[in-house]
Amino acid sequence: MGVDYDAARFWWEVGMTLGLLVNVAYQYVLAKGKANKEAIDNIAATVDDIDTRVTTLESEVRHLPDHEDLSEIHEKVNAIANGMGVIQGELAALNRTLGLINDHLLNHGSRR
Image (cartoon, rainbow, N blue to C red):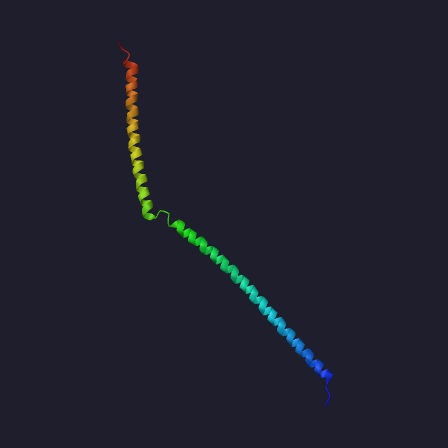
């Protein structure tokens, strides 16, 4: 029985082609997995950044006045505005009185 070199060469080439196709498929899957890992790592970094920013915002918001605090501030501002109105009225009356005193002194005060 003799060795058929043409058939051996044919099967060798078929084996090499199949090996090459398997290698190409493996490289494709490996590259796809690497790209997916990089995308996942980028998303994880973005999520970490957002988590840090949200934590910072929560700590800042914790110090802001709430509805009750704003209500108290509003009441105090109203009280100050009312007090300023009273002071304004008193100053107007005082100004009028001083004007009358000045007028009296200018017109009637120099008689001797």
